Length: 245
Image (cartoon, rainbow, N blue to C red; front, side, top):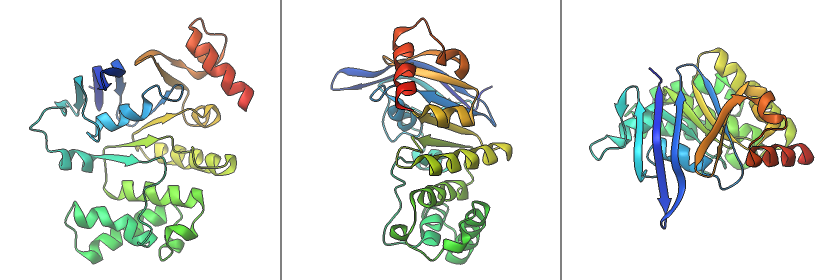
């Protein structure tokens, strides 16, 4: 059984289907990558999984249990599903350590000392412990991403959702994030990542799911999709990526 199993997922905004029957699975310990053009619903897909956005129909099973119903404990669900936002979503008035410990205190009810120790462990894991007293304004984009990831890992989630994790980073920092994700994958961390960045996708996964027109059009090895694919939207997407690289 997959850790996350999505079937016929639909999400409408003002009557317009952004997701129109998405089927996708995420296995335990996997790094699943979803690619597709801007506006195809990649971020909406992630937000439906942890109920930041309410699906219009379809099913999302997490560890075998349906999570889209009205009786689901959304707070508990989000503790098990970490989320890495495009723009980091760090609190400017909090230090690196306090940003990382906040969820442990507010959601898990840890005492301040215990939360700080747990947060420091994750910051050390991501080589950010030396920056624990700094504030987000004094960090580079790559460092902010590491803090955001440490904050997600501190909650000990079953899976981490990554929403365009390199969109605010330069190519050097993007490669650093790819190396970090590969390291976490080697440690058994399960991740579902959406991106339009071809170089980043190829660095963290061999296979990708291609989302367009509200559905997963195909899931295959990136090398196959990158070639002259028969589906026009896939071919055009990768041609644009090649020209921009």
